[in-house]
Image (tube, rainbow, N blue to C red):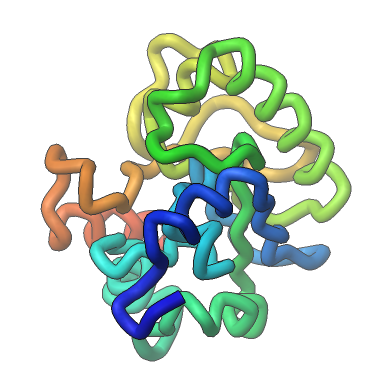
Length: 182
C-alpha cells in the first residue's frame, strides 16, 4: 500500500477480507454500518475512507472528546462505543447487497447484540434497516423495535456518498442519540 492509500490491486484483494467488530459487553452504543467498503477493508479500519464523515460526526456529536483517526477505532471502546456491520461481506458499494443478504445479516446482527447487550444499536442507513429488518415505514431516530434490552435507533449513513445529509445535519442527528444516552 502506498502513502496515498490502497492501490487498485490492494482494493481488489480486500474483497476477501472481513473487518473484526469493535465490540465488548455492556457498551452504551454500537454503531452498525451496512457493510465494509473496499477501501476500509484494504486499510483494516471501519469507516476508513478519508471522505467518510463517521469520525468527525462522532467528535462533533460528543461521543468522543476529539476526532479519532480510523486507525484508533479500538479506542472507541473507552468511550462506551463499538462498531459492527449488518453484513460482513466487503463490497465496492452497498448496493451490491441484496435484500436476502441484508435479512441474513440482520439475523446474525441480532445474535451479536443479544450477546453483547449494548444500551443502543444505532443502524447507520435507513434503507439497510428497512430491508434487513423488514420495517418498511422506519424513519431516522428511535425505533419501536428492541433486541432484548437493547434499544434500536436509525441514523443516516455518514458516507460521503450520502449527499442527502450535510455534516451539520449528521452531527445534530447523532447528538440526539448522544443526549438520549445521558
